[in-house]
Amino acid sequence: MEELVALCKRRGFIFQSSEIYGGLQGVYDYGPLGVELKNNIKSSWWTSMVYEHDNIEGLDASILSNPLVLRYSGHEDTFSDPMVDCKKCKSRFRSDTVANKCPKCGSSDLTEPRPFNLMFKTSLGPIEDENSFAYLRPETAQQIFINFKNVVDSTSKSLPFGIAQIGKAFRNEITPRNFIFRVREFEQMELEYFVKPGEDDDSLNSWVQKRLEWWKEQGVPTDSIELYEVPIDELAHYSKRTVDIMYKFPHGLEELEGIANRTDFDLGSHSKKQEELNINSEVKSNNDSNSKLAAQDEDSNWFVPFVIEPSAGVERGFLAILNEAYTHEDIGDGKTRIVLKLKPHLSPVKAAVIPLKKNNQEIVDLSIKTKNKLQALGFGRVMLENTGNIGKGYRRHDEIGTPICITIDFESLENNTVTVRDRDSMNQKRIKIIDLENYFTSQLK
Ligand code: ATP
Image 1 (cartoon, rainbow, N blue to C red):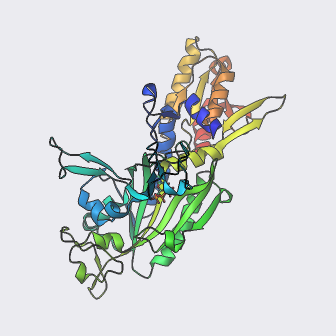
Image 2 (image 1 turned 90 degrees about the vertical axis):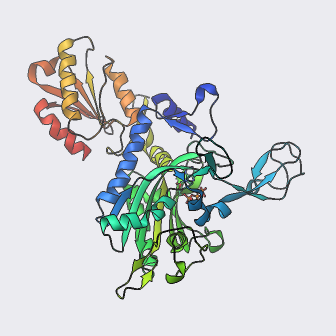
Image 3 (image 1 turned 120 degrees about the horizontal axis):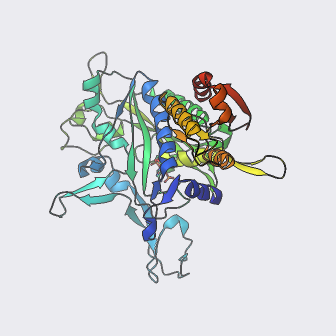
């Protein structure tokens, strides 16, 4: 973990937030390369969900939530961790991390565990009172449920179908830790997949397989993963069954993604006329909603769809992908290198174009032209690496996972060829400039 943290800072992937003022606990900023990697992870998820499924639509809903949303979802009552306070030094801990003694001062004068709600509140408008607040959403899912009818009416979808969303979520975690693994501000990639009751068990199994496949395509192999069947007494209040995808993080085996059968709890809770809907789960009686969040069967009877939810954290994905890609390699002659063996579609920089001499105008001009041509192909960022030191350029681009380095030298001016270097094999070969676009495309596809 320390090596990953150091690489992230050194190369500009991740910085501690508010660093110049001593930081802000559990919050991080993504630097020039971090934002690219994060965007690439999100884009890969979006492509696999929305573009590759004709029955899944996207959504980008608000972070600020009407308190009623999180009241009917059950979060106001249950989204909490049990906490104990040390009466002597006034520190607060999650009760499962304390064994009768304060971990800070050793006192055994502790309170009984009390629930501590993890949601952040903020006030809306100019006057702060108890009626003018909104929550920052603790998960993106609720905004999907409350938009169920909007999406159905505007897209004419019928079951089974899904709504996908990527966005920020906020949790006032008591003990943020392990770098970006547990933070207070993070992003989730969530799919809510609506099915007929009775089709939910099969659908959950099939999503578990699809999600394992997707992680594999991102460079997180199945042998770094264990599936965890969440025991019944640990299930969230809405869940009939949850399978967690657990990844061997540098600090231990922990949840990367959860795949839950949320039954008809959420749509049922947010719906009006609940008594007409044959709801299976125990929902809060709702007199505030103005919408029926339900579907009709062949005989025009109303029912509430069940929902399967694969929910993954972008930060945890980022950490797992980085951890898998990070390689310390012996390259002979007593030399080593650090290389990020990222899948090319995730690499922050797709290719670096390196002029041999940074002061030779002809070489630099040809490099800029080459860079612009590759950039226009639309695979992502192509970088002009004009530092005049090829060895340093290679080292830097190995460390940030750039799949291809292209060097332009005097020979390039004479015979229209360039040297391409492959990140993983370190093989170099000369190819014609007119063949470069094809080479680049074939490496990145
Ligand atoms: P944990 O048990 O680790 O707190 P959770 O079960 O509360 O996680 P979910 O509510 O299932 O998490 O959220 C879905 C996903 O969101 C998680 O699998 C994880 O990837 C991500 N996530 C949840 N909380 C955090 C956090 N504090 N920091 C970073 N990612 C998070």
